[in-house]
Amino acid sequence: MSGDCRSIAAIHAHEISFGINSNLTGRKEEEAMKLYQISSPGSSPALMKLETEEGQPVAHIAVGERGRGRDEGIVPIIGEGPEVRAKETDEGVVLVRGNWDNEDRCLAVINAVGSYDRHRSYGIHDAQGLQTVLSGTIAFGDAGRTNSGAEVLAIVSPGATFKLNSKYASTWYTWTGTEWQTESPEERKARLALQKVEQGGGEWL
Amino acid sequence: MKTTHIALTLRGNSVENGIAVSDGQVPFSPGSGMTRHNTGLLASTPAPDGSLDKIHVAVVEEGVVLVSCEETPQKELVLVKQYSNGSGGKRWPSFHVEFGSEIRKLSEASTSGGSGGETWVLVSAPIGWAENIASQFVNERDYGGQTISYKPGNTTGKKESDLPQELLIAFRGDEEMTRKFMDKVATLPSDRLDDHIVQSCGRARVKAHLEEISGDPDFFMGADPNRVAFYVATVHFSKVSLGKTQLVRSVVLSGTRSAKPVSANLSSRTTCPLRNSSMTKIPKGAFSFCKSAKEFAAPPKAGRQSSKFFKLTFLENFTAKRYD
Image 1 (cartoon, rainbow over the protein chains, first blue to last red):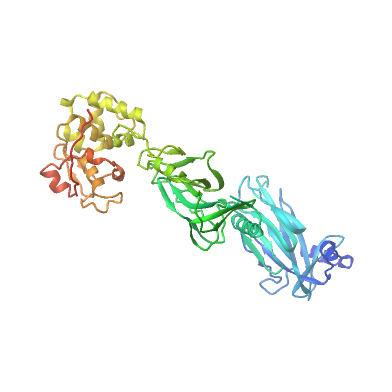
Image 2 (image 1 turned 180 degrees about the vertical axis):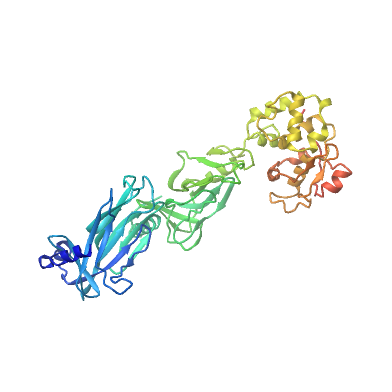
């Protein structure tokens, strides 16, 4: 697998930068992105380590699973340096290490699949400001047909929000540009309702 | 135009002033059921933790916002806590409200699974609505669940009945069944009834005895023999002795449901001299037995029962009332 990654990385002479965020917003291509991981719905986003416990650089990031009813996606990490940025090549996406400047976007590996439930909808719901780079599928059961959901690598813009369902609850995630905020649907509704009323909205009984 | 609401919390037959606030929300904290799923937002408020009394109410797409004020209230904002009791409390009545056009339902939160369940509803209602609902709810063990609707003209609340309240409760408020049971009791042959068994023995013995005498295997029609035996005694025995039924009533009269004021040694077991059986402690449900227990209770019988068995506090004016 790592051999495949290196072969993909070797093509990075053809790499092109992500057009949407860099070109439209005028950001420099060299800007670095923090890489976060949301390991399951409801969990707090944590910075992903780019080194193994042995101190070796992580060679790739995998999303999804391999097997029946599943999809696995692999993103190689190439180069040297403490930060990464995403690059799209003709053959796929790579993460490039380097001493990049910080920027307010971030990368996130989002696992949207909670505990087993036959009918629960596992996915990234009501997403805004999220650009999916690579997507995989995680499923339940050997046949992978009982239920499934997505695990993705995405570029998250400031102000981006999305909702993940765990088996028994839902959690809203918001990336402010500097940090993640999580809240329950009730907390989110309460905050938005107060904001609207403070701005003069709503109907007084 | 803002209408000032007075905040009230309604649960069964209890109406409390104010609605609790915590972390900028009206919290949903049910006593029964599980809240494993998202429960729903009742209301948000900029007010600090505590209790809201007089408020203005705003409704936006995301929910309800409550803002404190100090004006004369024109309406009620009622947090209606509907419930079905869970394990350990299932013999107590459930409380639900049938919401009519007089109220405006603003928000709702509910449990999802588990034993029992609760659904809290926030409503804007006319003044007096909560008291009207509360006054109609009968919170008596074994009475049965109730779904109550607003009755504007009903100032007295509970429906008055000429039937013994205790019997009515034993039959879960079913007047027809209560009358049928009273008819059955009236036809029992007094000379064949054993007053010791009826008044002093345990549930199984009372049940077997009365079913045998009446020849009716469904004599109790689902009611608990311990709760209705007193009526048989009241009707058929000229002197109602201080048996278990009276013990139960005395406990009710002498204290509250927690039974703290009761001085009797309830856990002691005393041998029944006639049947060589034993009498055990009073069932918990007995503490809600009767409100008008004075009507049925009789003075303690001297001797064994009063000295050893019932170290109880008796109220004045115990007189037996007969329903014949």
